[in-house]
Length: 332
Image (cartoon, rainbow, N blue to C red; front, side, top):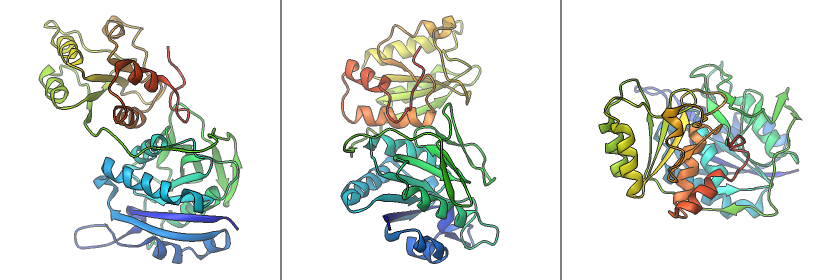
């Protein structure tokens, strides 16, 4: 039998009712006791890293998870991370950069309803996650949810309440599970040995463009951050209002060493700054990076990971456009 390590982080799956609403209370051991069938699939050890609502996740927690994976990597055949759904896509993206090229499956899962509820989806998701963690055909960081296996760099929560909470954005689902039987469509890449990293630049922000946006907000963030991810309209660009202040703000802060990552609010198909003048005029700025078909979650995590290693503009650009776990396919 395969030997799997379960890492507990809290989330809805481990929550119980309290006077103030659902609160994470259950340990990984308690979750496993609720699903005894898992012990027939593999040997399991448990490690509780923290027990929080995933809304409270920070980059420091990503580092803690990555460190636990590094410290235990040689002792186990795979890993299951129980996690809240609200920030699971961010965590999956971050771990894809912090633990690159793992041959062993690193599976994140959770639930929309706590494991103690009669209508819970947690038991099915947990069994499916352990089936995937034992697979010889799945590698690296994936989300397993509602019978779907999604690459860690391509996941997004697209339903706030439904059991089919996650979608794979601009990339096919890797596999499906039916009655806990795994059907793999795409076998992820892996390296001869995983590359671990425990450094992130947390001084990265994200802003969503709105019609008539005041440049003061972008100016405020760029003055305080090393990089800013901008969710633009359509295929991308900055509004060219009569005063041109948004472009002036970008020019001033990039000249001072900041980076801009341009992405889109549109969920599918990605950005293409070359299409319109409002985007094309940014293309010549070496500190303006384009996310193309990356998710915002992956773009944010990737620039944190890159700036944690280097601030050299050529190195940042090279690393950003170098695919990691199929995070970027279209590059103009």
